[in-house]
Each structure stands twice: as structure tokens, then as C-alpha cells.
Amino acid sequence: MAKTKAQKKEIISEASDELAKSKALLFADFNGVPVSDLSVLRKSLREISAKMTIVKKRLLNVALKQKGVSFDAQEFAPAQLATIFVSGDFSEAAGPVYRFAKANDKFRILGGFDLEKGVTMTDVEVNAIGQLPPRPVLLAQVLGTMVAPLRAFMYLVQEKGKRSSS
Image 1 (cartoon, rainbow, N blue to C red):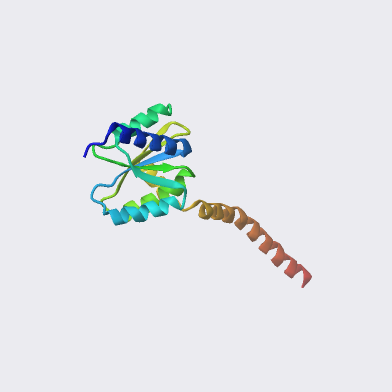
Image 2: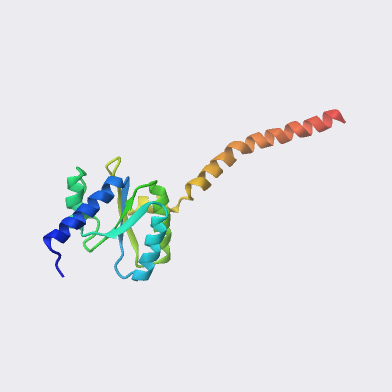
């Protein structure tokens, strides 16, 4: 069923509002994925300040043009695509989307676009970012590698102290 001009304007307006809040966009092919599975993905994305919507590429391009973004959504897929508006950290959204795509073979990540830098990301880049551990885990790993030599040094000093006091 074709949408009326008023409905299309409403869709463009909603997409523009989401774009104003977003730092990046993720694109995925969702054809053949059950609605119940997509609902689970949508819920997990809402928890991290991201929102997945299905917007026709032509209407999304109009909203992008209105916001002054030079990007063509038509280049990602000939069919419909799911657009994920990411308002938080890009890696926080890429992780759940990557895990969902890995669990559901019909869901494919097509790429992304960094609205702040104006850079297009390939599916390979988005998948690589999605495979990274969450930010708190990465920070703990970095801290662990920084503290490990200090702990080893402290152990040596303690052992040296025990030997010299005996």
C-alpha cells in the first residue's frame, strides 16, 4: 500500500529527529528475519540509546539531505534496509548488532556511517568493531596490562625485603 504525501512527510520528520540525536548510523539487511527476533534486537538497542527503524532509502536520503549530510543510503543494498540510529558510542551499538547477526544467519550488517566525521564504514569495519569487548572490559584489560609490571616489581621488592631481614 502506497503511503500518502503526509505520511511520507511524517516519516522524514521522524528520521530527521533521530538524525539530530544520532552520532552514527548502522545499516542491515533484515529480509527473512522473524518479527519476534527483530523485536528482541530493538529492545537490546533501546537499552543502549540506539533505535532501529525501517525507513525507505529514498525517504532517508531526503532526511539526510535536509540535515546537510552528503550520504546516499541507496549504495548499501538494492532491497529495504534497517537503519539503526546510534546516539551513544558506536561500539556499544555495533556489539549487540554483530552478536544478533552472528546468531541469525538471515540478518546481515551492510555497513555504517559516522555522522560526526562524515565517514562511511564497510560491513567488515562494523563487524570488527562489533567483535570488540564492551568498553568497561577493554578499560579493565588496559588497566591490567599497566598494573601487571608494577605488581611484579612490588613482589620482587617484598621478596628482597624478606631475604634481607632474615
